[in-house]
Length: 225
Image (cartoon, rainbow, N blue to C red; front, side, top):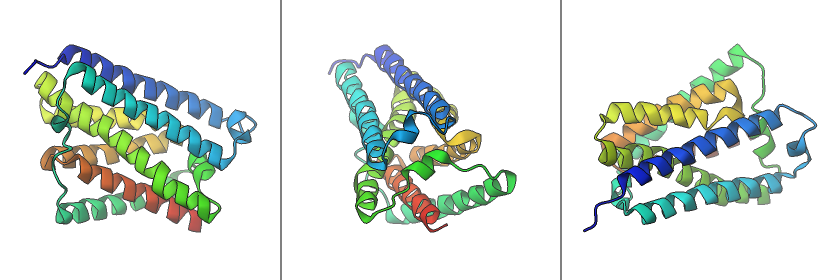
């Protein structure tokens, strides 16, 4: 069996992360302008943008794994999620997310403009969000930030898992700058817990499922407010 091209894998993965962070910052700049180009886009156009951008990232990760010969089982794709672990993790993070929203409201009245723009207004948009947009977001982000940056990097570098979990959480926070500084902090905290759960369970599907559920509940709660 050929030895994976670890250096190429590391460099390519980091390049993808940097690209995502840079694009998130550019999106934050565009969102800050109420009369900018994003304001003219329909909600379904925004969904298409999310699907295309995340699809390209996911394809990039897949191409990188294929090119470098890194086994996909290092990313935790072969480990089935345990229902009890899923329930405990999901319940804990839902509570954490609710607490963070309460704290954010207490600190500032600023609205998460990106969430506002993406929140569905019709049943068809809810179908698009729930069955296409959010699953793709959860899959792409967990594959990269947990599967690659923790599972793959652990095999490639031999670094202590705690370092990789912390590093992936910081990168995950940086990828959410479009949601404001509170969004960055919350995403980093969630990333820390999800990263720890991935390391302890070895299951990528576990964190993908929890990530999706958190996002869906967040949008449902926001739509009712």
